[in-house]
Image 1 (cartoon, rainbow, N blue to C red):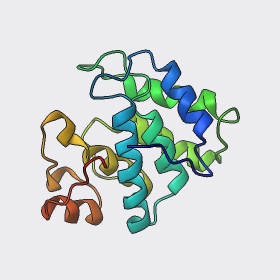
Image 2 (cartoon, helix red, strand yellow):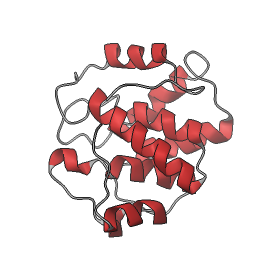
Image 3 (cartoon, rainbow, N blue to C red):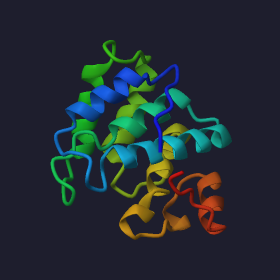
Amino acid sequence: MRFEPSDAVSREFFEYLVETHELGHSGAHGAKHWLQVLENGRRLARMTDANMKVVELFALLHDSKRENEYHDPEHGARAAHYARSLRGKWFEATDDEMALLCEACIYHSDGYTEADVTVQTCWDADRLDLGRVGITPDPRRLCTDAAKSIANNGLVWAAA
């Protein structure tokens, strides 16, 4: 899968994240996953009317501060802190967009389903890629009707 830049996420920003990701990219939480979440998020956001900028930023940042591939309960909070540090350097975002991005990052692996539709879209974009670790996404654990429909119909998007 190839990175496609947008107004929110430049090629240079993506390359910076890839180069500085300390965990590396051979596991389940590296650049390949980020790109799949980005694709999932872009597709879902068009269906849910979520804030596309937040969804795209989430895709690239949510696992960017993992310290291991397994149990790392604070990685979402570290990603949110990292996002705040990158604001104004690599991307622009309003205070409201940052609040949504940080909420999505902090809680993305906690199993929540209730939130703003943009946060829900972020979480669903990530959860629709659970097949990479051998887990079929459960529609009951998804947030948006769009993602639930995709999972119910067995149409979970695979990497192109």
